[in-house]
Image 1 (cartoon, rainbow, N blue to C red):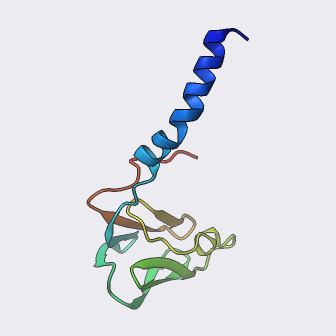
Image 2: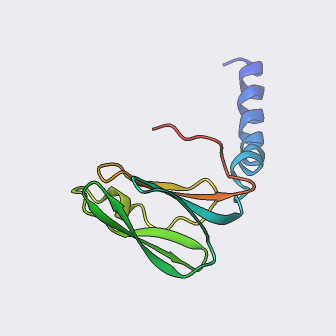
Length: 118
């Protein structure tokens, strides 16, 4: 390893916390949820306390909105990945029940990130 390599590694380690805070540390302020289904698009304030029964091709998915967050409570799909995704509270968070065609997204003025790839 040359002296330039050591300087580059040290510089990268020193800058890493700063870059993390700059690009990922800001929590997106959430104010609404957007639910997509075969019935259409529903937009609701995140401050409302309610349970939604959203119809999909397999049956009804149940969403719960409480204390500025939203989650899937139940869904007729087999894997229940949507239910296991848990509470969504930051702008840009998304959960989907793909077999049932129901998606919920938390929206706000400044999302944490613009895209996620799996």
